[in-house]
Image (cartoon, rainbow, N blue to C red; front, top):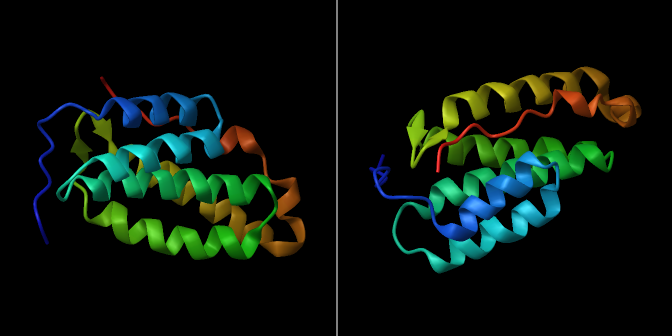
Length: 129
């Protein structure tokens, strides 16, 4: 495993992405986080990629795309596992727990009932700028 430089501030586009995520605009959050990911160099890109993959997972859930949500969840878990519990002010331990709770519900609902997912289960990303 590699070490992320978690002491630096968040990229401004990543900060915007987190604000959009917390507003429930997962598509635009993904876009902003992807722009931050492209602009950054080094291993910190994993942090931005992990969060943008959570946003896209939630977007799949919103659109009733069970298979897409399950597939992306597996991918973003791998990225989240590479990050410490707190990095650049982002509380990743909390994000991992809330994502797991969402996906537990999605799995329980299955592809037939994913459209009845209660979006109030989506929790904001906790962070300090």
